[in-house]
Image (cartoon, rainbow, N blue to C red):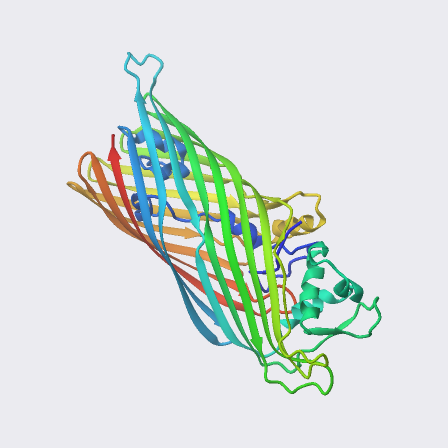
Length: 503
């Protein structure tokens, strides 16, 4: 059913998957919320669950669109900078990725009741908004000398139990995922059969033992998870505000992953000795999804707002296309080939479904007249409810069971404030999000800070924001045969500019 072998949570044993290996992080990258949207929203760390009055606020609580006084539109551009510091067996490396993107565009239309208002429903809002919910551009480089394990163990381990005739008389696209991986290793002399019979199922490595394998891992990711939202909200007697949204999600991810290894260990007396390996992969993931939001805001007194919102699971339908290749340097090769290589055409796998968990958000804000405001949101999301489907797929059943046990309910806190000096608004915010894992070594907690400034021209407004967040995680070079992760610290520094207009 699916897919590739990258295991981003090294140190935790994931059950074997039937055709292609899938990891919890494949789903988590679609389930974890990111601070995106307008500059005002980002400057206050997204603490808008009871405030509203911002196009991005409807992603937290859809009732928030009712707080616009007039028809309103916003366009937003952002500069993303992701810095990754990696440490692998005592060696530290750095990598950076910079992206410029138009990440938000939307408008809301306000309709006020012109009659006596006997029903109490005196105002409605209809909005449409597009946001890049998650900019996935990223670059991670890790390097170091592994004293114990070669990446070639990945191919040798997978090959055990596969008959040799499968690896010699084959159509690559008709092999299952494990057989494809074994073929790539066999075709480049990484391992050999213990005997020359077609039914042989046992193999030995051509990589010298003894450790001290210098290894490099480069992971380049481009792509996005976009969201188009249709919103509706209504006000009852200016005290109770209700809203709902329907969301259509777009996913397009291009991930290039390569591992290089070399060793200077003594040659074997006979047969091949592999001194260098380059394993290259490119994975395209595309698809779409659907979700909905419901929310309510209550204004018990003029200066206080209380909000409650529910975000449904997102149901993604995705397709993966994977292209792989291996090249080696083979010394003492009995076939006389010093640089064997095996690069294959891409394989398109059957579609599959990822269901992310739902989310509840409670919010409270206090407004100091025209001087400013302070707001706080607390959200809860149970990541153990992440699911790959179809559920009756044996591999997905094992993985879903693993996620049920390894993942946990995570709390997110967002706090933001704004202070106005005539036409100028000064803003700041704080954000903390717990790890999706019960043991957070694989994917740590997130801490973020933000600030910004805005200027109101009357009929239009400009806003500028800076946001920062930091998270640690483990990243394995390969999924089996090695359990030696690189420790990656990611630092995001984003600058966002928005232009808004009443019309």
